[in-house]
Image 1: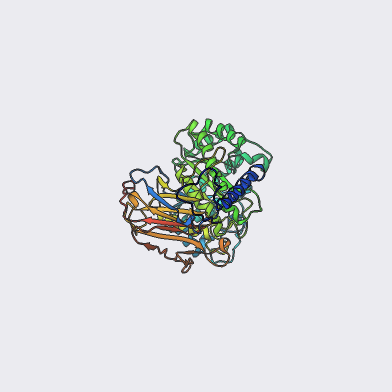
Image 2: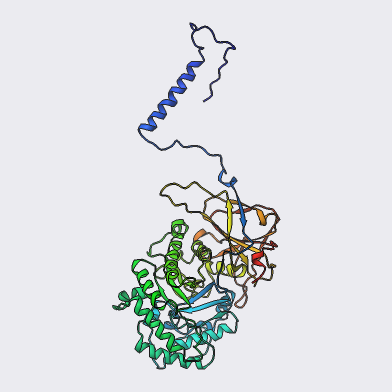
Length: 534
């Protein structure tokens, strides 16, 4: 509403009436006063304000990284893998016959390979001939005397690829030597433990009562670990073996009490403290659940709880997340194995490294539910490609990120949860495409709009290689196929992974992050002091 009025240069005498053009102005002011009083008395919601289209997109975010010293340094095998015992229960290990599966495993090296899960609670040693069940692929027809024998066989198969280190005694994770004598020693230990320490090798000791009708407290569990260590010392092969535990579940009150008792007794006995995390307990989930910042942040609180107990008894002790899944009960088809689940997985990797967790073991590499990286037909799923990019580009040194343009004023009682998450590491020194001193950013954009990021400070005017990972196909976020910089990612053949080609961005160009996507950005030739040396 526009009111036009021409006022005289001098006001008339007091007896003169006001100009006629003031009447509409008075009417307009009265209307505004009426609306204001109505809003105060009734509906107190603010009046809608029309924003210029694209306003959010014009917000420029300035990004810099501290390059002098790393804030954390995690294990070289930070991203590691787990095999579920169902592969033994259902037949023999396909690692021995599938060239495709070995190729996929080799792509994620270096890594630990953990053999374990809840089904190990119900696997018992029986020194009987039990014909292995072939799953249709070529391979030798051999007998499974015990499931440790399978672990040693798979370890040898992977060792030929110079990728994974292992084998693990279920949930005690012994790094075994690869000599033939190891098989016999492991069988003898298994027989002794099955008679003496029936509770020791079970998963999630806090759930013993539910699963087995028996309970064990933290102190007793700690004594069992000490006894195990003493049994291993006289055996040359195991005298320098590493021991990890207690592999507790979500750190609720009773679980924290168990961990406290365990650390008080055996904190110095284990080489790293382990626990497991599951993001979503229920079976019914929606694709939008994977985009909720509140869900993404649940892990951070658990990390602090675990660290508080560990640092009370053994300050500086390494902590491993020995098993992480998006959803319980084996996952949800077309959700926990889709592109959408990658937001949880990539944020998990960034958050754990940033808070000082030394190793994270992904449950499972293949053949268990829908939380795996490779499906039962040995086809890589979105989280596999995400993990492959992480392995190729991300090194163990974590760098501090400084951002301007994202800050919001905190409100009492309200937690600010960022939908744009940025992590920075030194670029992996295994990647010979980049000189030492380069930095890799990985960014998660959960916003419905694109975000623009301007590199500043030490990153200003540097060449950048973009690795943008997006869903491929009509399914959108529920897609099980992905594309890298617009090109679908598929294996070339059973023995060859595709080339991960970056998209070069000119120096000084603003990074544009599309809505609801993930990407890696290698900033070349930064010559970062923190990244020059291993």
